[in-house]
Length: 485
Image (cartoon, rainbow, N blue to C red; front, side, top):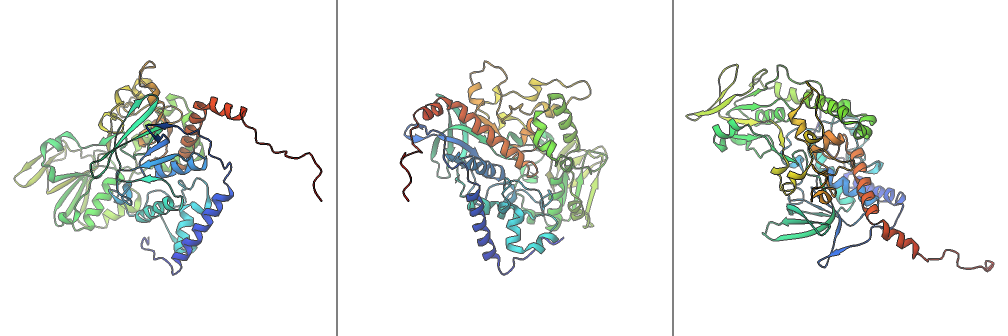
């Protein structure tokens, strides 16, 4: 697989022509053409109709969907500097995306906005036909272009500190790199903060307690792989990211890499490929709780395995090995060596990488901790039959049809606030299926979310819209005389 495709000589002109095509397409389909949400002010500033936290693919696509629905008083906030948003330029270590190249998402059905159109404008149609999967860095380049061509309103360097409810509005607090604090009011809040957006990355306690912080890292962290050259590396985890990190360490010259997983076999079935059908992507949220629980219990059980090319990326190195049925049960230092205990025996490493995913816990996130205790979880709303229990699924938020948080108790004072906070992170999966954190489900999830946001805003302002109609007096028939020849 060639992931180093070079731009053709007409790359700049190709992109310029595509930019023209995008603007033309958007102009052709721009109906209706009027903004319709009545403006609102608080403390001398206009209240945002929708604030979006996160300028990754889910946040950008949501802003575009709202713009197409003529909801334009929107702003996206991201704590990173411009160009540093999302996993593709931070902790993602795969060479290519894991999704098939034909999957569409942020384009929302506009052909000139698709990844394929962007790719062919630079490298040509033949290069697209030869391409297996889209390289990770090029996906970020596509998102950067997408943001710019659509002129999406992103405020970078805004670290979201939390939200409170104030006289019927969401009060959002942000901190900037210079230490200044900014407050914005919004009617709606969308959390598009990615895979760990409702919790934190998980490192087992025995690792935290038994090893110095400098001797381990989670797969989500910055890792100085160059410093691991010649070292013995242990990797814990069975998912694709564990293999991505193992491969990166090998490619950077690690002395050896041993990957350990508790399962007796490396996962091989990818449920994401099964989920890529219109029925599941579009209609899963309408299913009753028992069926949704059954779907998700199976999907979580299968997990996402390493793609074949990722596994080969590791196996081509003679100093790579893996151990199945090998959970880690303890870790300690013996002099300068890390000693890891497992049922299959003791192992010794110089550094360990932890690929054990994340924990869903709203109280651990600044975005959600102010209201975490009020949010209904799946464990509050559904009791699984014997043999179908899942402590993991029970910890996920139980969402309403528009991705909104729901209260544990109907009389909770924060219930009105929760109705206006929409969870577009991975933790929406049990309730809503694939959505903003997944390229595969983005098209359906984004449109569902944008429709729900618009409906809520219109219903809340219904009286004003009726008054607008009652006072409407712009005549269309302006003359009863015969037309002038």
